[in-house]
Amino acid sequence: MTIWHPDISGTDGPKYKAIASAIGNAIAQGALSAGDRLPPHRRLAWDLGVTVGTVSRAYALAEQRQLVEGTVGRGTFVCGGKPAPDSGGPLLIMHAGETGIADLSVNTTLLDSTTAAFAATLGELQFAPDLTTLLSYTRAAGLPEHRAAAARWISRTGLAVDAEMIVLTTGAQLGLSAAVDALAQPTRHIFVEQLCYPVLKSIAANRGVRLTGVALDAEGMLPEALDAAARAAPDVRAVFVVPTMQNPTAATMSAARRQAIAEVARARDLVIVEDDVYGYVGANRPAPLATWAPERTVYVTSASKCTAPGLRVGWLAAPPGLRERLLEPAYAATLTQPALNHEILRRWIENGTAERLVVELRAELAIRHRMAAEILPELRYIDDPNSPHILLPLPAGWRSDDFVASVLLQGYRLASVEAFAVGPDPVTPAVRLSLGATADRAVLAACLAAIRATLDSRPTSDRMVI
Image (cartoon, rainbow, N blue to C red; front, side, top):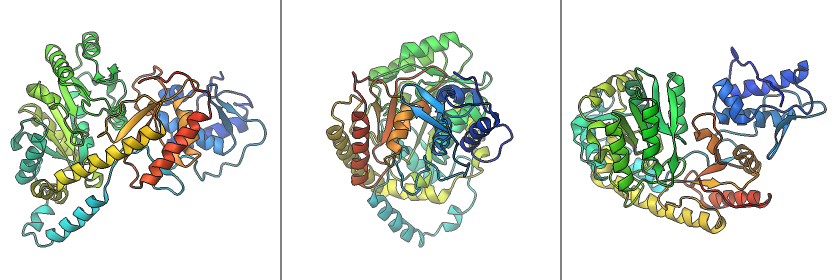
């Protein structure tokens, strides 16, 4: 393999465009010749300090410009002949909402009834006597009535919290960011799941925080793997975990597994950061992990997955001491919380709208899971009917990024498992499909059919379970 790595330092604009342009420049200058193999996506991403998705987009753009071509199971190679000019577009891989691409890589859901509820609440708000308060700066933790509503909503999971434990956040991302800032010191090192929320990876990278991935099974994080990691790195003080409908695997821990994780955290003096952003969609889920270790758990959640992602309403709940450590980074990130958004959620919680939306969302997701099972019956994945996403294992011979690119050519965008992986080790090829990312079931059905056709285009082998 040609040992070639681009220098994109000092370049302006998106990094994937800089990498694609560097490929073209290297070919023009003779540093790369026809037949040369480019570094694997994951290796180049690791060397450049970018995401695997960035490299995948760069290689896709370079292929569109006829600079390179990818071969399943072999890699990406420099083309022979004259390359197409570096026109800068149009892109093969597009952002959500761009023409011609149905983006099912974004884990979001939005019902038509949510839009109607939003419109109705906006109509009510024009008569509210406290509009000035809603448009003003608020104290660091948020308005008391909004924290009280959050405590009531969180209590639905079986976790007992009071308003004084709550810190309002702008979505769960701010909660995770504040937790990294507060808990990664002094070692600048935290434990996460081996397949981890990509935004958490970005938060850590931006702060120079090292991540150690902890192995997963069909229930999520393994207690014995966490214990081994803590023994190997005794100075690490925090573990971040998604116990309910883990992203991307959709695994949900049993009560026994949650208790075992809590016992390891207590024995190794770890603070648990529990990301329960999917927990409100799930029916009959176990109580939050925080129930087994309330004295050392920062509970992070939001309304994004169960009501409306665009409201950016989230909450932290933590015991005294931990809560105070989180207040400063949360306040520094936003100065104040959008009280208007939190007021909308408060009204929805109190008048039953939030509960109704959750029930409707569960019913819709159950229908979509049945669609997936009918079109992809032989694939073995964690089929939680309440999960907004599924992780589809790929047959032998497929690389995740190549499969994503093949389905993308048919107009549907998926998320590669590589985007979630922590560390340089290879992961079992798979793609994540967000079942609720499109409001139109027909679009989902067409995407599932494209996945089916792509799987059928290659020889199959025993399916691998993630």
